[in-house]
Image (cartoon, rainbow, N blue to C red; front, side, top):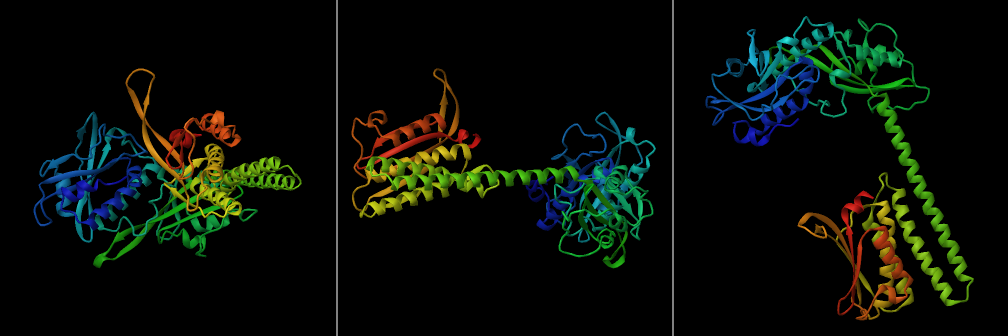
Length: 521
């Protein structure tokens, strides 16, 4: 959850460091809302400069709890209240003390109670958190709710004392455990004073069968059955589980055995002392059962490895086919048959390039720029061996990543067009071959009626400055197998349009390919 920086910097007197502190706070305060069973709104003072008296307050962030129903039907972000209209927020800002209101109020259709918590940064109150709870849900609290609220109250004191958020907090990660996943409360000695049912279930799954109250959490983890195969490696620090989960400092760790995997995140609870010092009064440990998540991750990695291996084997098989065709070509005395086999070798090689790229990539996407460059280099090398005329080439624009289903036919199309240009078009010394790729927006129109929309189109051009094409040129009348392959693949496989344009000198072969098709196939 992010603060609207334009509001905080333009309409308040907050500096960049203060705004950054508030940003860290709201990034983590889903934790606070869930522990409090309450809606939280962050109010910053409206004033012309840091020394002037506030004119009022501006709501710049809001979070709803996942552990209770919200009291807000509309988002309060952007709301303003004048100074004097909410004495709790005014007093919290002015005194730096947490202000509780025992009087019932009405918000929308709810009866609520509100608490105001000052946000301290470097000894200065820079904002106020409004904590709003629905009275109708504030029944006699269960043991879980009581522990949640006691931990929340301790963190609110840390906020008012300037010790929360804790420097180096790793709770920013979206994958970090949440309150509802499971919570363990530790006393100052690191012993478990409370464990939520979800936390107990997670440890039961790993092999712990006793009550957790009064146990040392680190010793509990160390006593769990070890994995039969070392499938999980802890981070570089070789500290014991007793140290990592003592609650003395922020720690996040993962334990895995044959029964399952849990993610543990320890957050110390502090109480401020005089002279800027603070002491630890306990800790909370968030526990998440990530067994299924890790199983799915391993399944995906296995699937990716299998797909890469398939592409690698296809590439090897295609290279074997190319070698057999070259071997056969050497044994044939008919020049036409030899030429036909050489062309088949080139086409098989183009397909192999695509599978070689896929074999080194976890996604089913091909970095097509590299494929095109290799096709051009290969064809240029072959052309130089067969001709003494120096030729040059240039690639203009980027193809980016294309789906495998598009990359294969497009690689064949470009192989044929480049080979055709080098063989028939570029004959003079100093000739240049250009492969150009660009995107354009084309109107998507029905046969009748107005324009429906605009669609992105991938335009690929193979340009030479050679002898050009006859005025009455047509692919069907040329009798060229390679060009017939180009037409068939462009129209049937790629769903695109193909045109040959006299360039005077030279020829432009232009392919229009719907980009949405290239990305989605």
